[in-house]
Amino acid sequence: MKYRKLGKTNLELSEIGYGAWGIGGNQWLGNNDDESLKALRHSFDLGLNFIDTALAYGDGHSERLVGKAVRDSGKEIYIATKIPPKDQVWPASPKTPIDKVFPYKYIIRCTDESLRNLNREQIDLQQFHVWTDAWTQTEEWKRAIEDLKKSGKIRFMGISVSEHGPDTALEALRTNLIDAVQVIYNIFDQSPETNLFPLCQKLNIGVLARVPLDEGGLTGTITPDTQFERSEFRAHYFRGDRKQQVVEHVEALRKDLAGIPGTLPEIALRFCLSHPAVTTVIPGMRRVKTVDSSCRVSDEGRLPSDVLAILKRHAWDRNFYE
Ligand SMILES: NC(=O)c1ccc[n+]([C@@H]2O[C@H](COP(=O)([O-])OP(=O)(O)OC[C@H]3O[C@@H](n4cnc5c(N)ncnc54)[C@H](OP(=O)(O)O)[C@@H]3O)[C@@H](O)[C@H]2O)c1
Image (cartoon, helix red, strand yellow):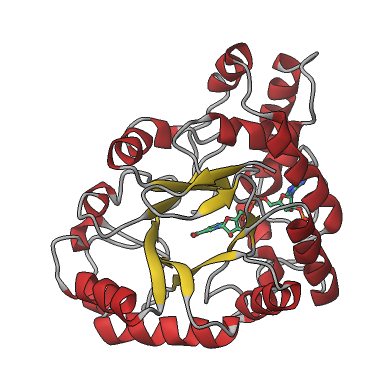
């Protein structure tokens, strides 16, 4: 496992981080806590030292599992979590005032709740789970971050930007209060390369590349017959003819990648790590097997430029979250 420095912070994060949404359980089904704890432990054994969770993932269940696994390991593992929007609206609307979404007291209260779930004194990276630059010029959120840092409850602050909206927090990044940004970045959505990544490089802000496997689309295992429970997030994401659309895009990708070593998920993760702005890529990994194949990718290094040129052609402009 290789490590990269998170922006201006002193944290050296493993190139492969652990996406802990799936282990929260309510929006992703088909896993159990024993399996999740085993997967987490195995990832630490392979050198992974960074986990991305959120208060909203299973109403704190993901945070509690993460806290337990980290405590039991006795290892130094960095944890990022997130403050959910108070109005429970994803993505943020520029028309909604920030006091309905992130009022000062709520920011502090959610951080305290996450600390209890994680059973920790300090959160390494706290993040706003939604953002719009319509809020950037207001003052209370800035005071909340300063107070959280001063009190030692958090070390660093980040923003998780809207789905397929990498440019919705650029102004906030310029305030000097934000240490990291989390964004969808994968072979299908390469849009952060245009404005967000150059700004992060200029300001030395860390980047967490999320949803690197397109919620499973880039694992190559989705077929028109793949079934999800109705209550699962992915039943919505891959609804209607979307599975067929994914199959067609993946087939075209595979055809262009014929002869290039590595499986599709490995190439998809290496794609993320090939951009110099990216600090860590955080695939969701609920099973030991997926931990194994994802963590291996770090040793393989960046993709050669001819492969990156092929992947550039496979950007796909669509929004399955809607
Ligand atoms: N708004 C936000 O802030 C936000 C939104 C979405 C996601 N996130 C963060 O980003 C993380 C990653 O996104 P995600 O979990 O939604 O989707 P993802 O990483 O794109 O895809 C997860 C899926 O890929 C599979 N997988 C992982 N590694 C694999 C490998 N090496 N080979 C084959 N399959 C592999 C997983 O399998 P198994 O689960 O079966 O192991 C799971 O089904 C989340 O866990 C969360 O931490 C944040």
